[in-house]
Amino acid sequence: DQELCIDQAVVFIEDAIKYRSIYHRMDAGSLWLYRWYYSNVCQRVLGFIIFLILILAFVEVPSSFTKTADVRYRSQPWQPPCGLTETIEAFCLLAFLVDLSVKGYLVGQAQLQQNLWLLAYFMVLVVSVVDWIVSLSLACEEPLRMRRLLRPFFLLQNSSMMKKTLKCIRWSLPEMASVGLLLAIHLCLFTIIGMLLFTIGEKDEAQDQERLAYFRNLPEALTSLLVLLTTSNNPDVMIPAYTQNRAFALFFIVFTLIGSLFLMNLLTAIIYNQFRGYLMKSLQTSLFRRRLGARAAYEVLASRAGPAGTTPELVGVNPETFLPVLQKTQLNKTHKQAIMQKVQSYEGRPMLADEFQKLFDEVDKGLAKERPLKPQYQSPFLQTAQFIFSHHYFDYLGNLVALGNLLSICVFLVLDSDLLPGERDDFVLGILDYIFILYYLLELLFKVFALGLPGYLSYHSNVFDGLLTIILLVSEICTLAVYRLPHSGWYVIAENLGTQLGQ
Picture 1 (cartoon, helix red, strand yellow):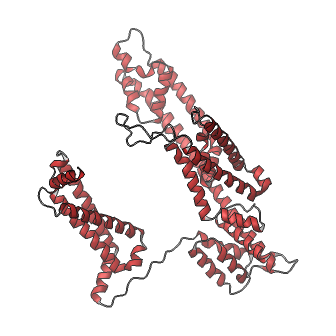
Picture 2 (picture 1 turned 120 degrees about the horizontal axis):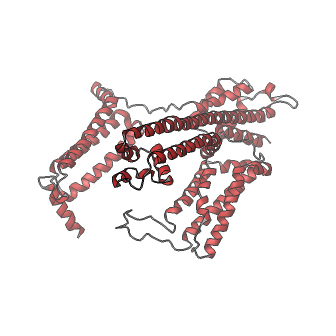
Picture 3 (picture 1 turned 180 degrees about the horizontal axis):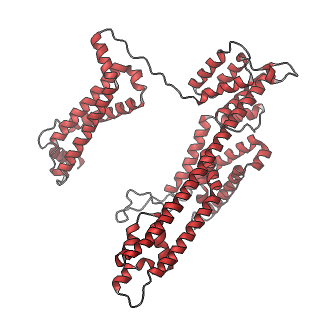
C-alpha cells in the first residue's frame, strides 16, 4: 500500500507538471502502463511512427520524388512494388491501434465515450484499415485511397497544440463567417457596379475592349475584384480602366478603402481577439490542471501520514515522505534540485496544502545554466590572455572576420562572373581561404585555452563553430594533398587534374 501510494503521488505530480488530466485508472498495473506510455522513449517512438506514415506520401504511387523538378529533364520516378509501402503502413496502423487501446484502457470506458478525439481516432483507424484491405485486394490498382486524406489526423490527435488551434478556429468561425458574408456582399455589389461602369459595347474600338477586358462578364469581374482585394496585383486590374477615364479611379479607391482597410482589418482583429481569448482560457485550464494534480498528490500523501478520521488539511505532508516521491518523478534535474532545496527549508515541519502547491512554482522558473569554471593560471601574462580571449569582444572580432570571408567570396564571384569555371584563376581566393581557416583554428584554440574544454563545449555556438572549423580544415588538407600549394593558374590545373582523375 505504501508503494502504491508513492506511485500514485508520482503520477499525479507528473500529470501536474505536464498539464495532463488526472482522470485515469490508478491501480498498480495501470500506473505502470501509464508511466511507460508517457515515457520519453515511448513518445519518441510514437512520434517517429507518425512521421513515417506521413513521409510515405513522397514515395507512394504517383510519386514526384525525382532529382529535378524540371519536366524536361526529370527522369522516371522510382515506383515501389505493390506491398512495400502497404507493409510499412500496416505496421504504422498496428502501432496506432495499440496506442488507441492503451489510451482507451487508461481513461476507462466512461471517459472514452465522452472523448470525441478518441472516438474520431477509432473511426479513422477503421476507415484506414478497410481502405488498406481494399488496396491489397485490388493489387494496388484502386483509383482512390481514402486513408491518405486521413493521415494528418494522426498528427493532430497526438499534438495538444494542434488540438487547441483547431478548437480556437472552430470557436472563431461564427464571427469570421459574419465578416466573410460582409466581404461577399461587398464583392458582389462592386462587381455589379463595375460591370455597369465598364460595359463593352459592340461598336467600341478594339483598344477599349482590351482595356475593359477585366469586367467582360460576371465571373471575370468577380475574379478581378477578388484579386484586387486579396493580392498585390492592383495595377493589373486598375490601370486598364484608368487609362480610359481618370474618374474610374474613384471606383477602385472606394472599393479598396471599404474592402482592404475596413473589412479585412476587421477580420484580422476578430481572429486576433479570438486567439487571444482562447490563449487566456488555455492558460487557465493548464493552471487548473497543475493545481488539481498537485492537490491530488497532496491528498494521497497526507492521507497516509495522519491517523484515520483526520483531514489532510490538518495533517500536512512530511518532507521525508515527499522526497522519495520527488526522486521517482520524471523531472528536469535542475528543477528537481530547486524543489528539494525548498522542501529542506521547512526543516522537517509538515507542509500544508498551500505550501505544497507553491513547490511546483519552481518548474515554471527559468533555468540558469551553470557554466564550468575557467582554468586558473598563475602567470600574469596568461591571465591577461585568458581575459582577452574569453571576452565577448573577441567573439565580435570572429564575426567580423567571418563577414570579411563572406565578402571576399562575393567579390571574387562578381569579378569572375563573365568567365567560365575552367578559365578562372582562384590563386588569390585560395590564399585567402588558408588565411581565414588558420584564423578560425587559432580562434578555436584560444577559446579552449581561455574557457577550458568543458567551458568551450558548454556553449552551443562554440560547438557549431568548432565543428565547422574542423570540417573546413579537413577539406583544405585534402585539397592541399591533391592539388598542392596554390599558385598562379592553380585553379585551372586543379580542374584539369580533377577531370583526369574522374576519367
